[in-house]
Image 1: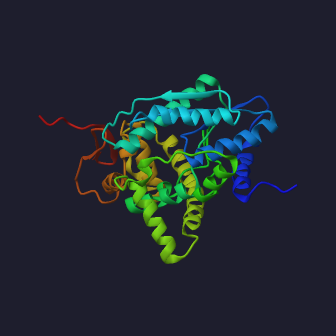
Image 2: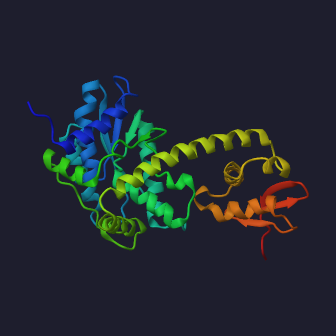
Image 3: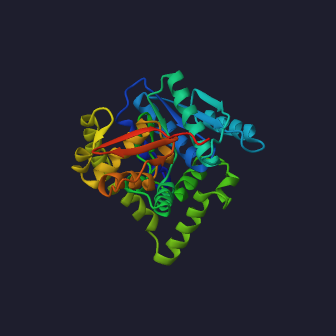
Length: 326
């Protein structure tokens, strides 16, 4: 008897890889938007996980950002139920943009909703439908921002209860898998709106494939995997260094004894622990703070996100609320 088509086999293989950490009776939730990627993932999970006595449900997050979003969520839920997923939860959220942009605000609301529902249902794992194409786009966006290794390492396969089984699967394959399973994916109009940076990155990736030949997306995804290992190692060294620093103010000589890749990570950690929003702290901020250590001529303090000021006094570095300007 012939096996499933290659596209279906690829999605199921990704789910099987995540299933090794699960136990009989566990509940796994698929985050399903109704698009091709998450529907293909839902179908693969519905096929693979019950064979291991693992229950499979779904969470559909309705962001309410476009007309008819409720109907789209209902159709996604109906298709998930048709695959045998249970429970299927539609979680409606309010997206509040605090200045980071609509994409980031929607992402924050979505992940908060997924973790909230997972906690309520005591789920062991939440599966996300990000593909290799999404990973390549993420790396391109990191390159455009001039980010460091952590940003260029893309999305992790696993973080907490969130897992991404399809990072080796392409969007073409998820569409083919949906066609084979008789699923009707929804196409988000935002996916073709060039107002969004991710859409522009997708177009650039297609042009790179045309100009340099096929395989660019796969190469970017492989680079992300390699950089993630490096970034994980440096982050571990930085965590050890932070643990030995103690309370502020911190000795400049101790910080200078660290290699620069570790030191800048330590500085970022100190900033975020002091209250700087992690998503707003970039390399220009850590570089400016690092200059207080390596090239101090009496300058400072350095104002960073979160209304904080980093200052050097003699051989000590400190972080405090920035003085208010009347």
